[in-house]
Image 1 (cartoon, one colour):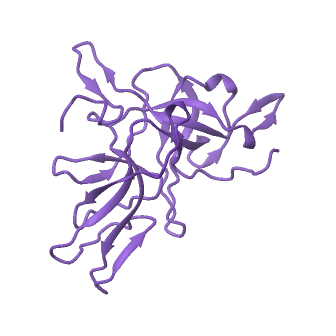
Image 2: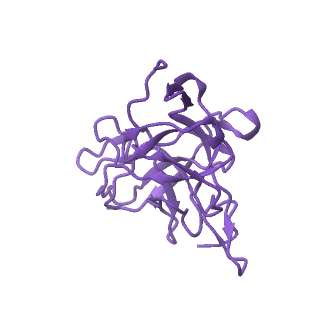
Length: 217
């Protein structure tokens, strides 16, 4: 077994941009609606709603019809009890900030961003794919993140395919954590990109990243 061992999924972690361009930490603030009930963890995918706020994107085999808005990397808001500004690794859900203040999510929204992800056989059981998985598409596995670390547990399913509607494209494998199983080299971590939008027979776009998807909200 190679070192280090990948023991559990951790969501989508930005590593760089297409073509080896550096990810310089550029992010964008997007609001979360007051009292939005669902927790969002560091590394979760999010999508935009019609009121301009973001919500958790829990799609698995396809992307949202209007596309993903990016990946959640924390948030800041005024605590309704202490009135102190908080910076959180994750949004716990159900926060109603004081009047006149907002919950601001920090997201990686560049559609050219590449992310590192763990590969699972289902839920949180880490496995791996072979090198031949590069260039193929795959499915998201939507696990709930940790309230202790604040990190996502979203992962990539080890079953790959060519369907254009699948939400994630595998760009590369992570060599450092590869291991051998039954004579095959397996890669439990991969480098991925939000897949391009797909079009149906009527030319209607769906999925992909919202900046590349011409369908409005």
